Image (cartoon, rainbow, N blue to C red; front, side, top):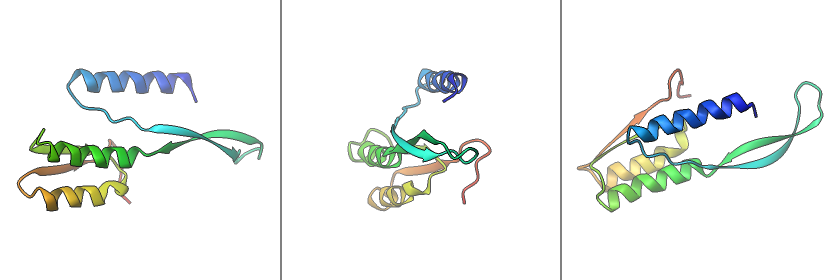
Amino acid sequence: MDADVINRHKKYINCLEDTGVTIELGRFKNKPAHCPHCHALIERHEEKETDVTISVRLLELFVTDQCDTAVVITGDTDIAPAIRAAKRLFPTKQVGVGLPYQRLLV
């Protein structure tokens, strides 16, 4: 992965944390794949468990009464069942969803 991309991402995470945003980082698994251009075997990185981690954290925040309002910033619709469950189980609490910049839900 491009070192500049990694550095920009780290700076972004630091900025969010400096403003009090709680960051839930996932993990990446190495996965072999064929290059679409030359067909050589290359190593790709596949995100694992991030949606589950965020979903569990949302419910944990409400169960432990750490907040009354949560905003989940994601374009991943896999989190939708957790958001529906949070709204159903905690009707007096608010859950909002924000899409990342220039990201459309499909």
